[in-house]
Structures are given as structure tokens and as C-alpha cells.
Image (cartoon, rainbow, N blue to C red; front, side, top):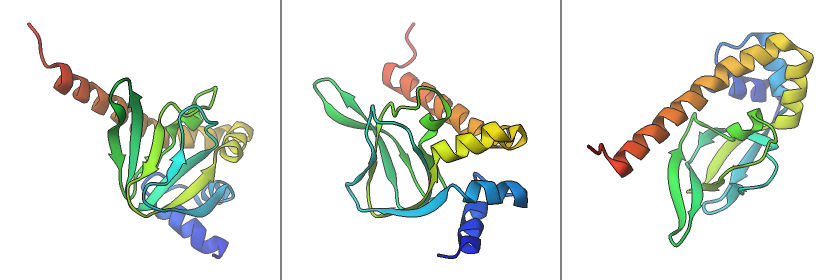
Length: 155
């Protein structure tokens, strides 16, 4: 794949849409195309959070182990979604598993590379944080709604 094509794909993802050309080139320098077959894990809980995945096609189940219940899917991320937000917060370890539910095509961003570029260029770092934080907040809100659904309003 030509780098220009990869830059178009990264720039076309909702996470980086409208990002300036200079910053887009920096982010794309950390990117590569990846594929996962249905049932394959993108990452496992406890491993180092070294990648961020911009989902192009397919669906990724985010799973937790529930004592006495086995694996439990708590969220599914589809096309134009992002998986791997643990790259943002030290100690940079996955706190859950991510498994392809079907064949998945994604852009993988090397988290160490992206963090390094963000540290070297605070304006890029700020731009990246502005783009990822709404997703973090949305996922916290979704978790709150799931808890309300599970436990219900108790008087």
C-alpha cells in the first residue's frame, strides 16, 4: 500500500477526519494495515497496550472475565470505531480482551510511536487528546447506562 493511500484511510476515519496535513502525516507514520479473522484476539487483558485500532470493517467484542460466568462481552465496536484506548493512560496495559467477532480490517497505530510524537509536539498531543477523549467519555457514559440497566433504580 502506498503511504498516500494510508494517509487517506487514516484521514477518512472519524477519529482523524479534518486533521491538518502536517499532523496527519505524523500520525500516518505510526500506521499500518492489519487484518484479524473471526475469533482472533486483537489483544488480551494484562498485555502491554502498544496499539490503537481504527476499525474499517468488521466488529470487535470487548470482553471481560466474569467469575463463574466465563467471558462476557460488554461492548461491540464496529466500522469507523476505535479500539485500544488504554494506550492513553500509564501503565499502558489492556484492562480487557478485544476479540474479532467476524473478519476485521483495521488500521493499527503504534502507540509508542504516537505517544512519542505527541510528547515531542504538544500541539499534536493536544489534537490527539481532543479526538480520543470524547470516545473515552462516551464509553464511560455507556458503562453508566449498563450499570443502571443491570442494577435498576432502587428505592
